[in-house]
Length: 318
Length: 281
Picture 1 (cartoon, rainbow over the protein chains, first blue to last red):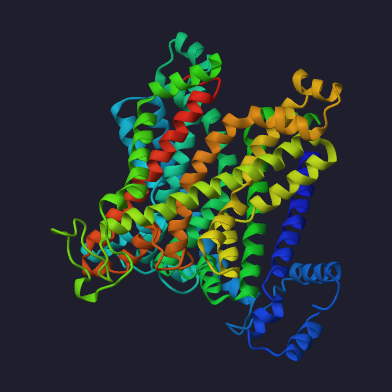
Picture 2: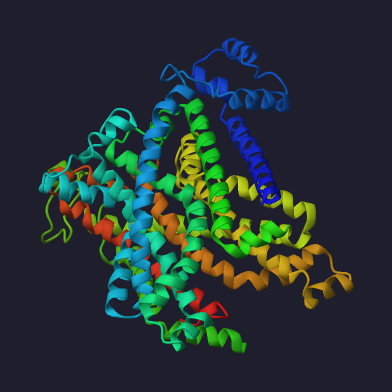
C-alpha cells in the first residue's frame, strides 16, 4: 500500500508540474505580454520596459518559470490591479464558498443518482426506466444556465418561496441563510444527477448480468437481497472513480451556477475576471482549480483502491 | 461491404431511439440550411416599431427586441451552432487521434511523456480553459471553434492511445515493420483506420457538448458577437426578458438546443451500441 501511495502521489506531482508549465505558457501567449495586459493598451514603451524589468519579465523563460513557480508554491499568485488586491486574498475569500456549493451539490447528486440508477437497472426497459431516462436525458442535454433560470422563474418569481440570489458572506453565514442556497445547489445537483445516474444504471446493468447473480438466484435468494448484498457494492465502487473524473466538469457546472445566481464563489470571480481581462486572477484561479482537480482525482483513486478488495490486495502484494 | 459493418448498420437500424434521433437531426439541418430559402426574413435591418411582437400572422414565433422575425432568426442562428459544433468536433478528433496514435504506437518514454501532458491539460476544467482562451482572443466564430477544439482533443487522444497500444503488437501491424514500412505508414494506414468506430462515437458526443458550450459561452457574454445569431445567444438574450413574459424569445430557442442535443446523444448511443462488439442490451 505504501509503495502504491508513493507512486500515485509522485505521478500527481508530475502532472501538477506539467499543469503549471501549461499555465505559464498561457501567460506568455498573452497579446503583448503581461505588461501590456496590466498597464493597458496606451502604456509607453518605456513604462513597459520598466515594468518588465521590475517584475523580472526580461529574464529568460526558464528563469521566469522557476521564479513564478517558487512564488506560487509560497501562495503568492500575483496582484490584481483591476481589484487592487492580491490574488491569493481573493481566492481565500471565494474558495470556501465554492467548496460548499460543489460539496453539497455533489453529495446530494450522489445520494439521488444511486437509487435512481439502481431502480432503472433493476426495472430495465419498463415504464419507470423509460420515464427516468427521459428526465435525465433532457436534463443532461439542457444548457444548465437555462435550468437555473427556469428554477428561478418557478420558485422565486411565480411561487415566491425562495430568493433568486445566493446569500453573501462566508460559508458559515451562508449556512445560516439556507433558503438562498437551495436553488443554486439544486441546479448543480440536478445536472450532476443526470450525468451520474446514467453511469450507475450502466454499471448496475453490467453487474446484474454477471454469473454470481445467476448463482444467487439459483440458490433462491430474493432479487432485493441480491441487489442489496452483492450487486450494489460491485456496481458502486466505479462511482468513486467517476467522482474523481467528473471533478473538472462539476467545477465548470459550478461556474455557470455561480454566474446565474450571483453566487460569490471562485467561478464567479473567474467569470468577472474573464470579462474584465484581469489576467493575474484568471491565471491564479486556473492554477488553483487545476491543483484541486489533481488532488481530487488522487483521492478518488486512493478511495477506489481502498474499496475494491482486488485492487487493495494487488497493491498489498506489490 | 464487410459482414461487420453490415451487422453494425442493421443493429443501428433496429434501434428505434437512434433512428428517431437521426430523423430529428435531418429535420433540424433542413430547418437551418433550407428553411431560410423558403421562409425569407430580413435579419439585417432592425425596426423598434415591430419589437417584441407576440406570435401572430406574419411572425409565427413573434419578433425579438430589435423587431427581427424569431422563426427566421432561429433558422439562421442554428447554422452557427451546428457548424461550430461539427467543426470543433472534427478538429478535436483529428488532433486527438493523431496524438494518441503516435503516443500509443511509439510506446515507452515518448508515450509516458505525451500522456502525462494529456493528464495535466485534462485536469484544467474545460470551461475555465475555454473562458480563458475566449478572454484572450476576441470571441469570433473561428476563435471559438479553436478554443473548443483545443480543450476537447484530450479524450479522443486517450481512447486512440489505448487502442494503438494493443494494435501495435498485432501481427498485421508488425508486418508493416517487417516489410520495411515506416511508423508513419503504420499509424495512418493501420492504426488509425482501426480506431474509426471509437472515434466516430466520441465525435458524435463532442458535437452535442460543443453546442452546449457555445450556448453557455453566449450566456456568459463570451460567445459569438452580435449581429451573428446563434441559439445560445438567442436563448440568453431572451432570458434577459424573463420578468416581461416574452416566452417566445426563450422557449423556441431553448427547446431547439435541447431537442438537437438529445437527438445527437441518441445517435451517439445508437452508434456505440451498434459498433461495440459486446452490444448486448
